[in-house]
Image (tube, rainbow, N blue to C red; front, side, top):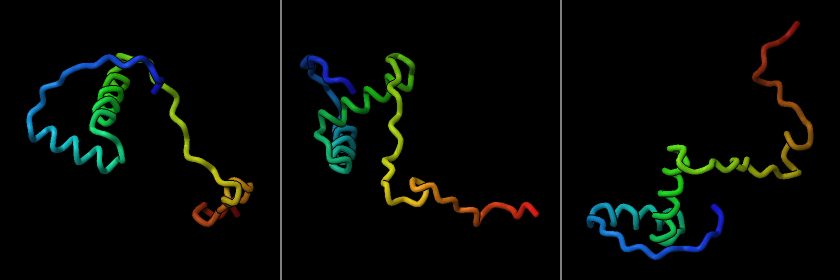
Length: 80
């Protein structure tokens, strides 16, 4: 998410929803405000309301067998 100027906004939310957001934020190591921003951004992106940013793939470590070019054929059918 790009760092843009933030606009303050008051939000009224029911206690049950707030409790769920607080728990989710804690699980994700985010502030409640950050969690609400993340959820809104994801919803807007998924609905096609904002431009979809390219997904970043998993980090590949140099010591991974696949990164080193090794092949694991153990689950492939025998081609004889």
